[in-house]
Every structure is written in C-alpha cells, then in structure tokens.
Image (cartoon, rainbow, N blue to C red; front, side, top):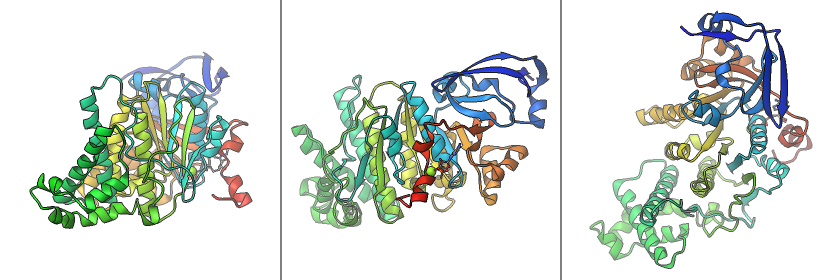
Length: 452
Ligand SMILES: Nc1ncnc2c1ncn2[C@@H]1O[C@H](COP(=O)(O)OP(=O)(O)O)[C@@H](O)[C@H]1O
Ligand SMILES: [Mg+2]
C-alpha cells in the first residue's frame, strides 16, 4: 500500500493565479495516513496525482484547494489514458458554462478550440469574446459547407495513401448518414453500391483536382452507369433498383427538407489562426434524425479540416452530444473519429444529460452496448453534474462510484460536479470569472425571451 502525504483542511496555502494557471506554494504541517483509509472516510481529498499544472477550474468542495485541469498534461503524466472528457448532467446545472470557461481559459495557453455543432446557438458569444464570428448554418443563410471536403493533406503522407484515406473517410460518413436515415444497417449490395458510386465520382474529380459534392453521389446512386454496375456483376438497372432506398434517403440532404446546407462547395472555410471556431447549427430544423444527420455532416467537415492542422493542442467540444448518440451508426463513426484524434493531439469533450445516453442506441444488442462502453472508456475524464434519482444507480455502476460518491449525485448544486479523472475523484465547484459571466449566461436569454 502506498503512503502519501495528505493535505488537510485548515491548512495555510498561498494561491497565485496567472491567466487561469494556479501556482501553489504550500506551507502545511505534513500528516501521514494511508490513502485507502482516508479515502474510505472522505473520498475527495485533494489529490496530488492530479497535478498543479493546467487551467483553473475552481475550488475543491469542502476545502480551499484550487482544482486545475489539463488533459494533455495528465495524459503525458500517465494519470489518464486519453485526453477525452465526458460531461453529464441535467439541464441548467452549468455543463455548457463549464465547457465554455474551460475553452476560454485554455485559449490563453494557445490551445485552439473547435465547436463543430452548436445546436442551441450559445457558443457564438464565446467566439465573439475571442474575436471571431461563428459560422451559422441554416435555411436562407449564406454559409454552406461540404462534408466531402478532404481537409488538408498531412505533409508526411504519400499522395496515394492520402487518396485512400479520403475515400475511406467519405465512404464511412456516407454510410453512417445512410444507415441513420434508413434506421438500419446497409445491405451488402447497398454498401457496395455506395462505394462504386463514390469511387466513380471521385475518379472524375481526381483528374480535375476538384472536390465532389453530395448531389453528384446521389445522382450516381440513382442512375448508375453500366460500367460501375459491371464492377458488381450487375446491370445498371439492377443496381439502381437495389440501391434505390439508399439513394432516396441520401437525397434528403440534397433536395427537400435538408437542402441547401451540405450540398455544395464550402463557402466559409475554417480560420486556423482564430483561437476558436464555432459552427452554429441552431437554425438547422427538422425531426430528431434530421438534426442528428446535419450535426454529423457539420462534425465530419470540421474533423476532416482538423485532421492535419498541425500538432498543436486542440479541444473539440460536442455540446448536446446526446442527440448524435441516439443513433448507432453515428456513435460508431464518433468512436472511430475519437480513436484517430488521440494521435492528433485533440481532446474531445462530449456533453450529455446522463451516462446512459451513451447506451441509448437502440436495443441492448451486443454491438450497442460494446460501443457505449467503448466510448466511455475513450473518455478518461468523466465529470458528473446533478443526476435524476433514477440515474444514480446506472451512473454509479458505469463509473464504478463508491456509495459516498453516488450519494452526492442528486444533490449537486449548479456548478458543482464529481470529477473522475482516471482513478482519481474530486468534487469541484466551478468558479466563473467576472468577465466570463455574460459570455456563458444562458439564463439571460430565457429572461429576455430570445431564442434559447
Ligand atoms: N459555476 C457557475 N456559477 C454561477 N453560475 C453558473 C455556473 N454554471 C452555470 N451558471 C449559470 O447557470 C445557467 C445555466 O448554465 P448552462 O451552462 O447553460 O447549463 P447546462 O448546459 O447544464 O444546461 C447559465 O446562465 C450560467 O450562467
Ligand atoms: Mg448546455
């Protein structure tokens, strides 16, 4: 059993803060105890393993200890196995406020922040506070983005390999969109139809060095040429019939309710010099599935752009991520994206209402459960804000909480969360700075009756 020096209540501590980073100089009478004994009595001791480098989050509840956080530092120190963060809590307890102030504070250290979908239109204030305008997507608005954009080629990658990579990425996005819209797995013939259509369109563009757009894929699916059909040993007519439903569902993004947003060339490229870039998706209307499809197109586009944007540290925030997590195909996509992002220095922060949102991908089929568990495992840092009573048990089970920790969950006031960072726990009060308040205040808009 390890012996650790425990910092006690009532200690004298001098805290110095510089742009969110806290430097601690302690003058405490040391007290020795076994960690295990002490944690059983009170599991939220200030934990030295969590380090003292990072952005200031707030205070550890019941003490005057600062809580700082830097997922990359902790990853490098081996405290966590990945830099991703899952943040869960009921509405109105300050989840977005925490994400926004982490974002604001991290930009002070040169970390770039990307928000690929902002379904409530509340991140624009954060972007403006840092001098950039959000890119707003919606009917009648000028911005249009092409989810098939390849993004910049990583300099070290050979051209051939890069083409294969782009094809695979586009194929996976289109298959996820189609499966979500169809609400079922693609049939083998559909999967192949999609690949040959995409390959045919890609080949045409490769010669011209241009980028395909969604309407071309839909046209190629609706009316496959004899040459593409032959690759599958079918006639053009047979292939068209077999892939009709797939084509019709993807057509939604090109004509009708979802048209005009993702079906042309990109009008507003990402500004890689800006500290934060936000895609405001709050005006994307439609049923739940439509919104999830649109959020996925927006995320795919931004993720492709980020894939090669250098080695600097980046935070990608998925606010209201539970919308995407309801669809198995989108969870699958998200998970493979997250696996890639670790190599790129990207920390993803996903905000949900409850941990069980992760498992809400339909029937408790083994794949759904495995995906949910995988996604949870891919988030080494879990921050739990207040939960409904019926969520306490599943949350405790999923996160391996002690009884003492679980008991806290229903009573957590606004801004207070249980942080599980790797194997370490802390209850933290998120402290907002004066300048941050107006930027994160979503209540104000409720009060003035403007769009929530
Ligand atoms: N730590 C905090 N201290 C003070 N006010 C807070 C804090 N966290 C959130 N708030 C306020 O609570 C309101 C709701 O917060 P929000 O982050 O939008 O909730 P959520 O995203 O969980 O629904 C906001 O107006 C915000 O200003
Ligand atoms: Mg919110």
